Length: 570
Image (cartoon, rainbow, N blue to C red; front, side, top):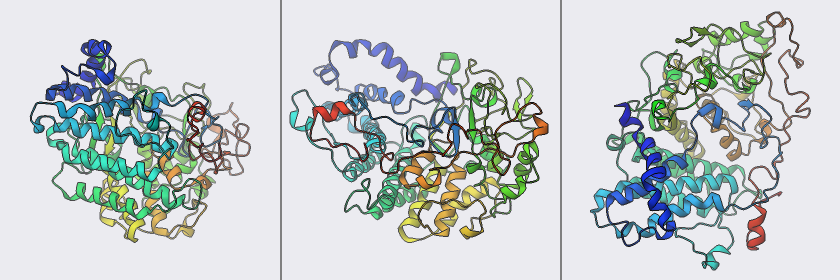
């Protein structure tokens, strides 16, 4: 069964680097066996396999994706948050390769002589992949030229035209996802290691929410699109989520009735094929050379990852009300503070960071005793809040160095995110609070029902730099807590135009207890919390709000095509 679970990721690697070598090398990709290829459904299926390893190259959720946000500090300051990115001097040709290759499929799939039903899945995958690749570029550059066909060297008019408005690109992405939903098989037929209707609907909800909030909160700035209607996108997000929630699909929230463990265990399984919440994931097989380093960098080498005070203080108390972290930190320090908040607060907190007494590895018998705030870079945790999410103490490589590869699954799309997308878009659209959907997440964690608290009652209040309602504030909090360290917080900060949350601020750590580290003297702030980056970030993050919401267009492209305009501030 396990071989079936990982087959798509192993097969595609073998196809690309093995049997496909002759296929690729004989002719350029835009003329690969035109007289002999594209005739059968297998031809189309084999062609789309090449996109699986490139659309999601990551293998470890926290170490590789939970960066460039105010939730986690990893090694050195984020160049995005700190306004340190330099203008790109090269070109973006390599970033368009996958889109061009998908368009080759669209130009040739009608040559297939097999019945449509035998290749409709592959057509749906092609629509999904083009949407995925374009969405990555949309988030990075904003306006883009939309290409639905293959460009040739003599396609001068297309190569030299200006960028299309990002709304046109977003609309085209969503249209691709609509086509994907029409063509793809359901998860019941494909499993959740291959693109399915459920995955396409979930992704559509993500894209639509992103563009809707981008246009709403960047309206009137150089980053917004004149005349854009955010509600158009909120409606599409709501529609996609409702289809997934109400249709005949294999979905759900992973819950066994154990709120202390269910959320934690969700992210540490090797085989996620039978978990309804996981709509799409990447599977691994260490024995075949396709393992990952997830457990090594979560249960053994922390590698200078540090969860911030800002994230920790977002968790509500067990009573469902804002918790006075600052007040508690005045009397409880170090390990006492960690064990205290683990006992008093939302169980998702202790599922996200290590707490003294936690078992780290059944194989080695290791337990978490105290955070390695005084260690070298490979073990270091600068804030005292050490990432735990995606750990599996029962994994055979838990508690061992990253060289010992494991098979922890990598979640790409999950139903929990869809519920949060729906809740946010629904409120943005008509001020309806999606209590039923939010409470599915609360119930899994053993938390009281979702409640709208007045912002002024929160001693850890977040300042977005603009006014939002109490309800939207709590919906955003729920999103941050539920999806902590999953790699989407940076996208949230960008689409919400939320630089005020981190600009001119430094990540803070836990309240330090000198008695636990007699020979170590870290810098502390006025409240006794570790202020590790006081010298590195003396003025806090230096995000440039009129520039850093997008990347620069590579200079070579601007030189070659004078119709391209540089992004704001660059």
